[in-house]
Amino acid sequence: MASPATTPTHISTQPVSGSVTPPSFPGTPTQPYASPPLQQTQPVPPDYPGTPYLGHTVVLRAGPTARPSGRPMPSRYQGMSFSASTTSPQAQTIAYTFRNMKPEELHAKLLSAVEPKSNGGGASGFGDDVLHPTWAIDDLFSSLKSLGIVGTVSEAAVSDPTLRHCVRCHDVYHERDNGLDMCKIEHDKGVLVNMNERPGYVGHYFPCCGVILETNEKIEDTVGSWCVVGRHTTRKEGVVFNETNVRDCKKRGCYATGHSPTVVMAEP
Image 1 (cartoon, rainbow, N blue to C red):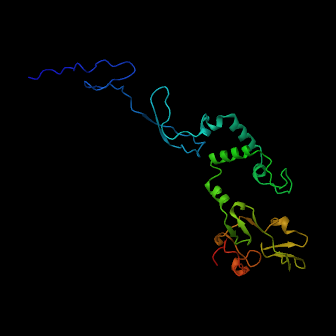
Image 2: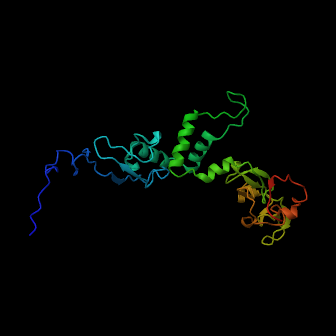
Image 3: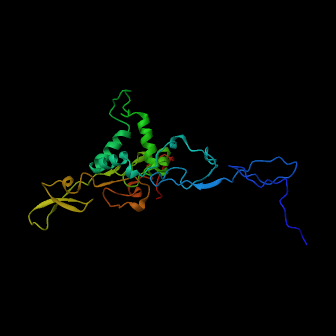
């Protein structure tokens, strides 16, 4: 009959306070037991979607000096408060300012802060001085990028040196200079016609917009100063052509004028 199991004399049965000593054999140095590292996901609040640590899992070592052993936290995020954005005084102040400012006024102020000045003056005499310190513009860029307002598409557009030919206004442009109102086309000149609804009266017919106005009316007061306002484009699919002021490149003879081979044009 087998004798009951007994605890070997060389194995300690009393754990040391604060640590656990694993079994060891005679002649084997006793090593302190280290608990396995804790796996903890440190989520990033939704108001910082641009951070590289979104959903990133880091390994935290046990103990009072626990520090991430994964990728080091960038210095710009150290000590950053991750409170809910709606509770901070700064966020509330910004929200109040936006609610009490017309969108076009906010857009104009931001654009004025970052666009180069082209008035020929300025402290440097070159007319391209921005009237704000560089660090303020850098901080604004970082904030807009972190909030997802400025993205990789905008960065790629600014660094793209390609010259393009607009299929609507037929100007040559860089994408970094493009915008929602950079492509502008004037109205056709009015043609004198009889007004059917008023026999004996004549008016001006504008083929580009298909409207007839009385001789004392101005097209600018009716449909705006420009016939077409939009972005420069090389895609014919998004342009409404006509036979007067918005003609395609083939009808205008753009391919025959011999543009530089470095200018990107739409296919004929």
